[in-house]
Every structure is written in C-alpha cells, then in structure tokens.
Length: 283
Ligand code: NDP
Image 1: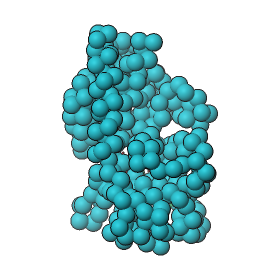
Image 2: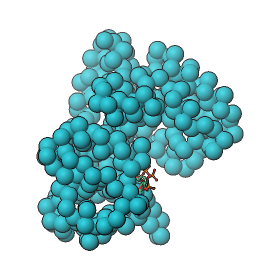
Image 3: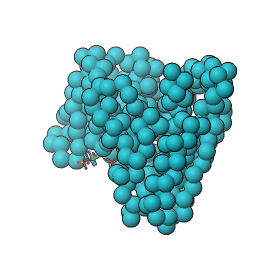
C-alpha cells in the first residue's frame, strides 16, 4: 500500500504560513488582492472561479472579478489587462484560458505585467523559470508539484525524475524547477519510445498528459513517488487522473490521489503568489 500524498495537509500548512503574512500586510494597510479575468462563461472556468473565490475569502485575500462577454473583442481584454497592470490595489491576476480562438492568447498573456502574473503565463515569467532568475512567478500547477514533494520530504537531489508531458503549463516548467533543485530530469511526450520502461527506471514520475487512467501497472515499480497532475473525466463522467490509481497504488511507495491531490494545492499556490506579489510592493 502506497502512502497517499494528499493535498489537504499541504493546503493547511500553506494557509497557516499565509495567515501570518497577510496579517503583517494588513497592518501596513495592504489587502492582498487577486484579479480574476474571465472571457465568457465556460463551465470549467466558472468551477475554478468558485474554488478560487472560496479559498481567497477563507484566507483574507480580496478577489476582483473582471468578466467579459464571450464575443468581447481582443482590444477590450487588452484594455482590461492594462488597467489591472496600473491598478495599485490589485497585486495578482489570474486569466482563465483557453481564450476564445479569435483572440491572440500569447499576446494577451504578454500584456500582463510580470509582477502581477501569478500563474506564470507571460514569456517574462517563463524566462525566469528557465533561466533560474528569481523574478516573476512559475506556473501554479508546476509549483504545486514542487510544494507537494517538499511538504512530504521527498528527496530530490540526485534523484531521477521522469516528467510525462511537455506543456508550458506543467511539464516543461516543473522539469526546470526540479532540475534547479538538482534532480536529474527526463522529459517525455507523445513521441517518446519505450515510455513504460523509462518510467519504471525513475525515482519520481510526474504524469501530466490529460489521458484518463492511461498509466497502469506496467509504467511503475516499487518504491517510486508518483504525482498525478491529470484532471480528466472517464466515460462515466467521473473525475480521474492520468494514472490508473487502483492498479498503481499497490505497487508504488507514494502517490497523489485525484481528486484531492495536486489540483487542491494549485489554488493555494495562486494565493501564495498573490501574497508574495503584495509583499513585493511594500519592499
Ligand atoms: P497539454 O495538452 O497542453 O499537454 C499534454 C502533454 O501530454 C503534451 O506534451 C503531450 O505530448 C503529452 N502527451 C499526450 N499524449 C501522450 C502520450 N500518449 N504519451 C506521452 N505523452 C503524451 O496539457 P496540460 O499540460 O495543460 O495538462 C495536462 C493535464 O494536467 C490535463 O489533464 C490537465 O487537465 C491537467 N492540469 C491540471 C492542473 C491542476 O491544477 N491539477 C492544472 C493544469 C492542467 P506532445 O507535446 O508530444 O503532444
């Protein structure tokens, strides 16, 4: 039986840490504030927005929603992001993606000031992740993986990490963050050959591909730590990860569940980045 790396204890510890810092900010007259920018009303965005608002309120972080019509022109979104950049009362900004196809998403991501880009979507933020610079914020899900490993004291130095998935949201940034922590990282993708054998060799496997329960027993070996980043729905509409939990949990040493794993921590990382952005303003 594997140890289950649950998100809740990580979230609770982060809340405790943030609570003290938010109190200091409040004494300085600063209420950390997160802008949520949504175009249209996709169910996924609405669901994540509800979670973010609830988490923010429980911590004492203010939320400012900016909602644009699903057919709003790019210029309207650009103006919204620019107004957020100049608004001294807003410290962080989370823009729901994907944006409608008629909007140049890359251009909009780069409109956001890196200091407020708490989900690491601008090129400047990503450049920091890839160059080991300390300005800006890494993408929240990648940072949530590192939080999870640190919270459960999973050794990283010299360990072999296999990351399956190479997106700029998860796979690439988490690989760079773990490389920075002196792990040896192998990045795999849809064209990788002998993926099960590569995964079996790792100390830590991170699955971030969006393939429901695709990684079964043949990908894993005893003693491994497995982070399942996937958020998928199976054919019965049930939420599940990329890893076939029932098959893999009896084999490995530790594993994150879905739900209740990485996704839970991601929202807290967004809040922690917002608090850090507010603190940076005071320095
Ligand atoms: P993308 O679709 O952007 O990237 C998927 C990656 O998986 C690609 O690099 C792709 O390879 C790789 N891949 C696809 N099929 C295979 C395969 N058969 N074998 C090996 N690799 C494969 O997804 P994201 O990175 O945005 O998200 C990944 C998952 O994480 C999704 O389930 C998403 O819902 C979830 N997610 C969870 C979050 C959380 O907070 N927990 C937040 C963000 C995402 P290639 O590059 O070759 O196409």
